[in-house]
Every structure is written in C-alpha cells, then in structure tokens.
Image 1 (spheres, helix red, strand yellow):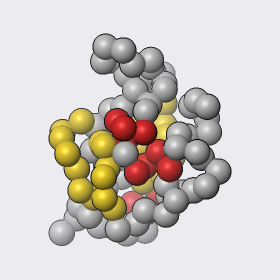
Image 2 (cartoon, helix red, strand yellow):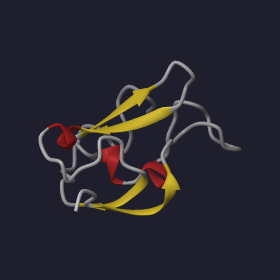
Image 3 (tube, one colour):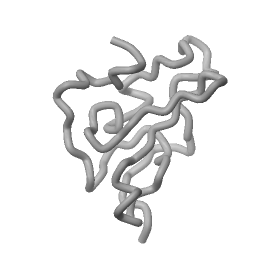
Image 4 (cartoon, one colour):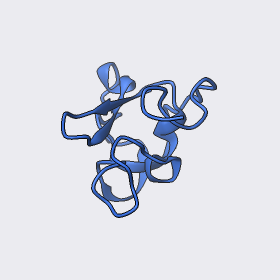
Length: 92
C-alpha cells in the first residue's frame, strides 16, 4: 500500500484559487499536518500555487511525493516546532 496519509478530499493544491484565500498563504486547516511537519517543504509555483513536498517520499515509497490535502493523519509526521503552523517561507 503506497498511501499512508489519511485524506478528507481530492484537493492537491493549497492557498490558491479559492474565494477568500490569498495565493501563497496556505492555512493550517487547508494544509493539515504538512504545515507543521519537519519532513514537508512548501513549494510555490511561478503561478502562485503552493504544493507540499513530502521529504519521506525520497526514501520510502509508502509516502506520496505531493500528498493530497489536507493531511489529517500520517505515519511519518514529525512536528517541527520552528514552523508555528506554516512554512517559514510563505507567511507568518
């Protein structure tokens, strides 16, 4: 089984294109655990879409490279205390 993250819907992009959302500023509610995980990295496209790259996907095939969001449960989750809920490069 490849996917180990529990998902609630088919969204794959956070922080772009929806009413009330500013491009490049994903919320914890829309992103889930990835926003505070030390294994995740926010990648912003040239068009302003934000994708979350799972670093565990490089060494463990159970984890998708870009998990569907929001991720509510994940076997590889490790809290990154320095993030305070969002990626340092995106917003504070």
